[in-house]
Amino acid sequence: MGKGDYAECGKLPGRRATCSSSSRTTIVGAVLLRVDPTADEPIFAQLVAQVRLAVARGQLRDGERLPAAREVAGSLDVNIHTVLKAYQQLRDDGVLELRRGRGAVVASTDRDHTALLRAMEQVVAEARALGLSPQATANLVKEAFR
Image 1: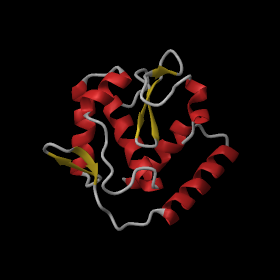
Image 2 (image 1 turned 180 degrees about the vertical axis):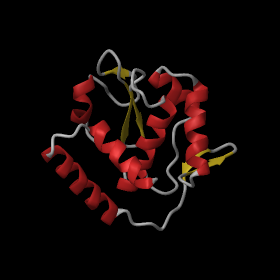
Image 3 (image 1 turned 120 degrees about the horizontal axis):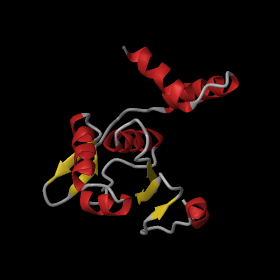
Image 4 (image 1 turned 135 degrees about the vertical axis):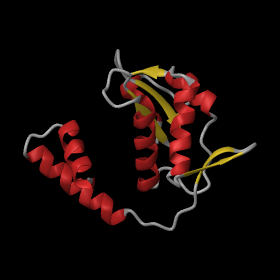
């Protein structure tokens, strides 16, 4: 990710930025995390979803260390317990390992998500063609899991 990738938010690596009045961003590894405190989805769930996606895309690799919860909380201007809750959920789901003295580390997986990512790209393309919003599309996907 180059400097130009941060231009939309006026953000440089290692610094806090606000892209709009409601969106907050920070950098984790090579991933730009963005939370929207005004969204219906809880902030911890937004973080969980973004880290999961980054792992599935290979943007966060096995063994890669995530910043301390305090650092992420400070960068996003959220409560540290919100970030800890996200890290704990990711640990419970097998995405992260929480190690004393080492913090949060991306867990080793042998899964290849390439086919799933291609299918998701097709779902997104079809949803756009039908004029569905990202939230409506996400709701349809969530319903499919029930």
